Image (cartoon, rainbow, N blue to C red; front, side, top):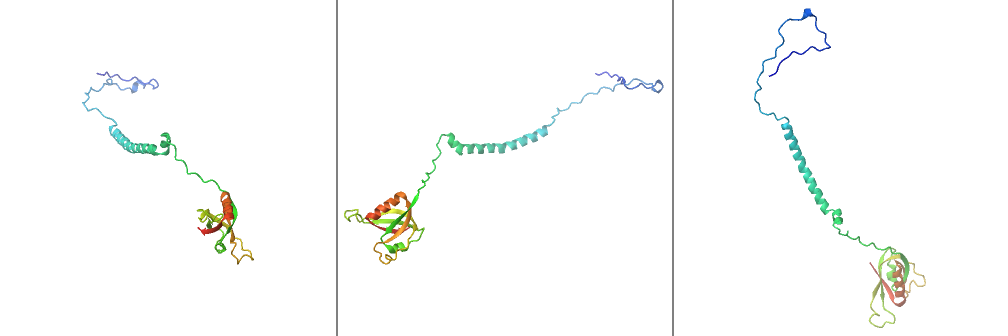
Length: 194
């Protein structure tokens, strides 16, 4: 099978002196031996099995996360926008209303004495011009939930009379102030506490 030849001495190693050499037969090769039959080796299979098991275990949470992400993508606001549905309109913001102070003469002076600054009142107009027709005696609300800005002190000469009523200052929008003035000119005004 193989032929055995002695290795030559390395060139860098000096040859031993002739007297120290041992005489003997040249080195012979060992007899050939047959190679026994064996099953093929599978190197690293146990490590592969462990790696495959770990990979499978990683796939389960990854698949769950992928399903959750898909569900969120289908129900989120971006999905609604991608489906070309217009977003719901925000509720309209009320326009800033500028309030004015409107002095109003109330027919019942005793009712005005019950009022305090900050109270909310409804101003009701009763009676109309001339007192004729179906609209003449029907009361109507001129100002709803008007804030009392002030209650002036009654004048000494009219404090006990009560015939002309009493004055109250209300904080209302400008349009409502105009309606109060117009209603006070043609009808008697009363207030109810809210």
